[in-house]
Length: 86
Image (cartoon, rainbow, N blue to C red; front, side, top):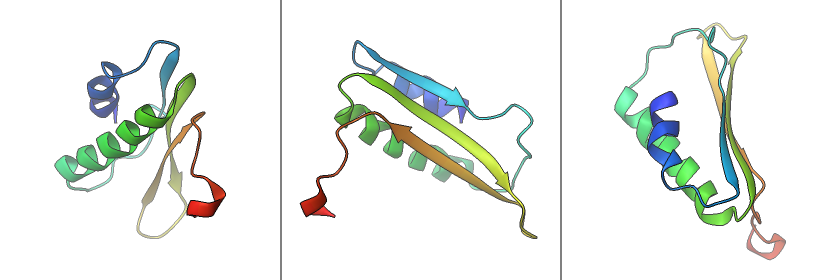
């Protein structure tokens, strides 16, 4: 997660902060790291494109499931998707 944030930080516009709120004690999972990086860069990149000011936040949490799921979330203060395009 940190490498995706580091990669995207250079694309931030003035007045936009990138917040990495992934807990340091998040359990390790088995995943394709290059695909995960690609997904995070895509999601953060989209947030950068539509956020003129405010912040973009990456967060994660362990979900209590038998298969040890991690939930990742990218949120931002951008304009969002217009209701007529949902």
